Length: 214
Image (cartoon, rainbow, N blue to C red; front, top):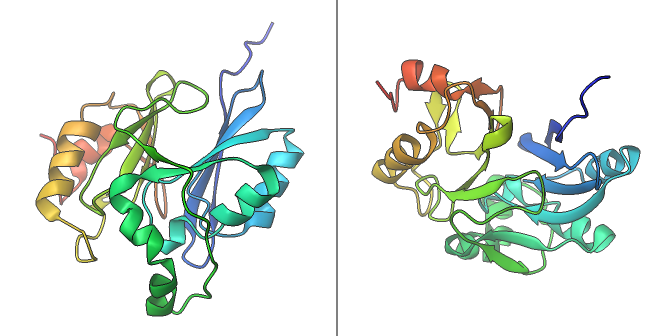
């Protein structure tokens, strides 16, 4: 008898800047979390419907426009609450300015329903929110240790790290977040980055030119 999967997982690029959105769900309860709905709400909702999933939480690695623009549409369609880290509220509140600065059509957003705390459990699959500031003050990575999966947002990329030249960015802080909070994970952990290809913790420890672990 084949073993029942313990987590349903799908990631795909969305929105004007092709942010990697993730859907993570429990295969038994069919409860799902969406991480970083940066656009294309219709596609995200279609994926949920096709897999008979109930969205119970909308969470964000940070509040740059390309990671949040579809959050309001998802909440309206499903009733799921929106959460991010409190220290990124200033970015959430300035989404109209962000859209103007990057030449992206403005999508109004409702206020968040709550704030993510460091080490807060997620709504399914044993995930936790890990505060990893540096790209933004409220940047969060989502860790699923039992599944060797990390959703890193724009903190860690394949052979790169997130920008620190935008409002609230801090290079020393992002380097410390990566070393202390991410490189401590199992080296086989798959890393879903905010944009572009995935990687592993082990690869980045050895080969990332910006923050090398050893």
